[in-house]
Length: 345
Image (cartoon, rainbow, N blue to C red; front, side, top):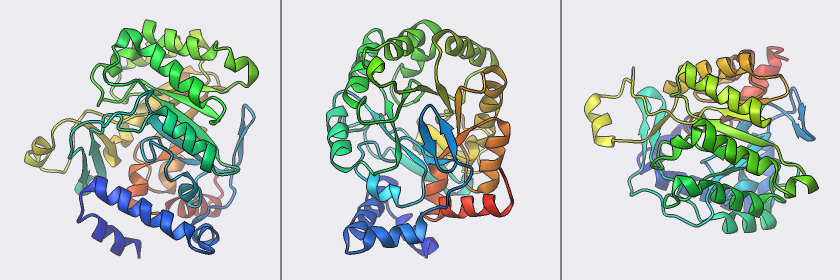
C-alpha cells in the first residue's frame, strides 16, 4: 500500500508531498478512533530500553530534526513507533528559508538533497505547540539554531533565546552548527565559538532548576583532525552528547546523472550516500568519548541492519529521516521487530 502511495507522492514536488502526507496523517488521527488505529498499525514494541540522565528511550530509534520543524505533527508522529522525536531546527525569529524549490529526491541513490535554510515559524510558535499538544510519554528534543541574519559573533544570543523559550518543554537540546544551508553556520564548529555556546547553555541559571542535557550535531565532512578538535571541545565543556551526523555537501559516488546534480545545485545530501561518512565520524567519536556521553547515529538508516551497524560502532541511539521518507510509516515497527527476532541486545 505504501509503495502505491509513495509512487503517487513522488509525482509531486517533495516539499508539497511532505505536507500533504503529514496533513493526511493528522486528519486520520483526528477521526473517531483514529489515534488508536494508527498505534495498532504502526507502533513499535519496547526493545532494548535505554536509560540516560533520567530519560527513558523504549527502543533505539528516533526521528531526526528537520522532519517537523515547528512541532505541527508531534502527536501524529508519536503514533508511528518512534521512541523519541527531535523538533526543529528552530530559530528565535520566524524565517522563510531559502527560495523554492529547495528539496530534491535522488531515487537512484535513495537520497535527498535539501537547502531548506532553517525555514520555521520561530521559537514562540514551537513553544506554543508543545504546550498545546506535546505527546504524553514521548521524549522530545529541541534542535536549536541561529537566524540567517544574525552575525556569527552574536550567534550565542540566538541559541540562548531558543534555550530559554523551550527549557520547560523539551527533554534535551541539540545545538545545530552543522547545517550547510545557512551561510557561515559551520564556522561555529571552530573551537572558541563552539565552547562559548556550549558553556553558556550548560551554565545557564535555568539548568539549576531542571537540567536539560546539551547535545551537539556535527557535520560529516570533517577531517580526522577536525573531529579531534571537537573531541577536545567536548571534553573541555562536559558536553552531554553528540548527534553524528548532519547532511553532507559531497556528491562523490552518486548514481544520479551529473547534469541532474548540476541542475539541483547546492544543498545537504542525506540518505544512503551519507552512510559511510556518518559511520566514519561515529566510530571516531566512540573511540574518543567516555561511555556516558550519549552518541546518536544518523545517516543512511533504511533497515534493521543499519541500526545494528550504528549500535555496533558505538551509538546508543539512532535517528531516521530519509529512510523514513523512502520506506514509509511501518519502518520503525519493522526494524524493531527484526532486531528482536534476531536477538540483538
